[in-house]
Length: 206
Image 1 (cartoon, helix red, strand yellow):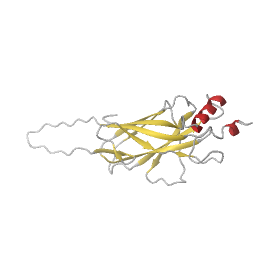
Image 2 (cartoon, rainbow, N blue to C red):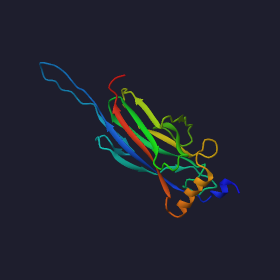
Image 3 (cartoon, rainbow, N blue to C red):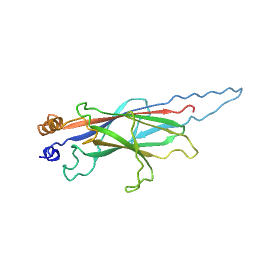
């Protein structure tokens, strides 16, 4: 009996949580003998439509997209499943250069074969069907720098791809996989979380 057939009932739902924080470290200074009037640069970032620039850590829940697999129930996760989730960033109200860092982790340590493997940056004019350039995720982090230019920033999407590794590179054996399936059947463990901790910071200098 093939492993694929034996694990047909191994189905899990998947949830993504994002812990997000935004900080800015700015210095404004001037000397004059007259009156000085300056306008402060704007600093407001939205992540999945939520304003996260008050410096308070918060958690957002995201529903991931699991790729269609004829051998697995729709929207469920099983060995060899693949999928992605989107982090939508709107910096259109930012007037300084900034950096971002996303630290990724799977919350369920008993499932090391569920891994976030690649990511892609989708511009605001992206439409489904466009070619997507994927980059390998290293050290479980995604980092980037956006340098300010006249006209400001456009919204963009960070798409994170994950998979349940099956075959080469897997560390869970058939027995371990099957335990997950039994737990899901009995509702003992029928879901898992993956976490994206996101940090934005004003870029002060090169």
